Image 1 (tube, rainbow, N blue to C red):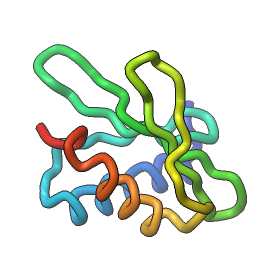
Image 2 (tube, rainbow, N blue to C red):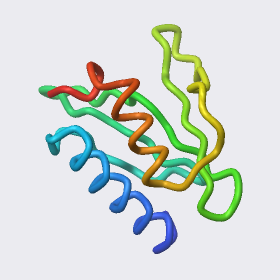
Image 3 (cartoon, rainbow, N blue to C red):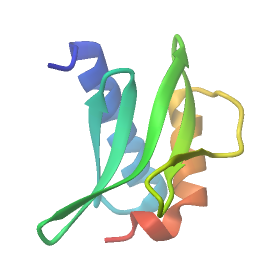
Image 4 (cartoon, rainbow, N blue to C red):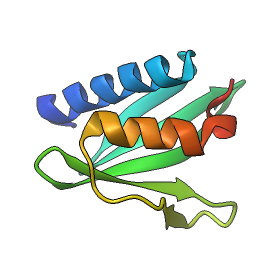
Length: 97
């Protein structure tokens, strides 16, 4: 079960993504030290990206490639809002409903 802090971080990330994309289609789920960004399409759930906490309130982002491997996005570790903005910018087409 995710910790209350992980759940709060997931909710905050989901709000930031909605703000940056203008849509509420992306859902965030805590998974260990990661925050998974998922798109729900019909009956499918597609995990598009993940943020990993590498230090207190510092996150890195990775994109799930077509092979299923996690490919890091080209950016240094940053706070949750900055990382959400990076993901919303670089993966905009994947975050459309």
